[in-house]
Amino acid sequence: MKELFVSDIWGYQPTTKHTPGTDLTGFKVEATDGSIGKVDKHSEDVGSSYIVVDTGVWIFGKHVLLPAGTVSSIDTAEKTIHVSRTKAEIKDSPEFDKDKHIGDPGYHQQVGGYYGSPRL
View 1 (cartoon, helix red, strand yellow):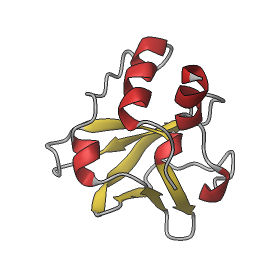
View 2 (cartoon, one colour; view 1 turned 90 degrees about the vertical axis):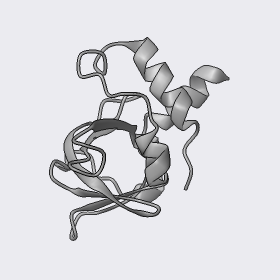
View 3 (cartoon, one colour; view 1 turned 135 degrees about the vertical axis):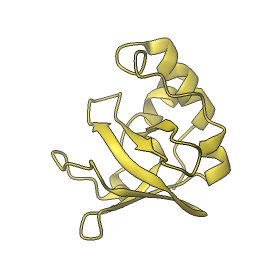
View 4 (cartoon, helix red, strand yellow; view 1 turned 90 degrees about the horizontal axis):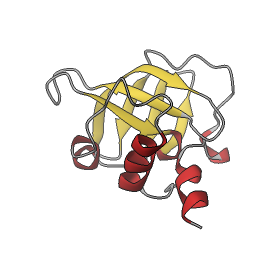
């Protein structure tokens, strides 16, 4: 059951209105309690979809990896992504590791475990 739980967080939920092939780079990202930055990069890989958010000055230029399951909605007209986590939850997330985020299942388990299951 744990594997299903972890993989659920790495996929876009049907309610997000995500359209495969949409370039999300540059979209604003809104937590449940305010803006957290802009999408620096993203992936639509099955079982490993995510967005990397450049938080800018908000948390001193930190980048954060958000599994696609944290995305609650995507507004392509407004170029905005809403995530179902608070700014504090995102700020306290595991440090983004640009060398491990691709192809390291242990890193994905750590990040997926931190965010838990998708919330709508």
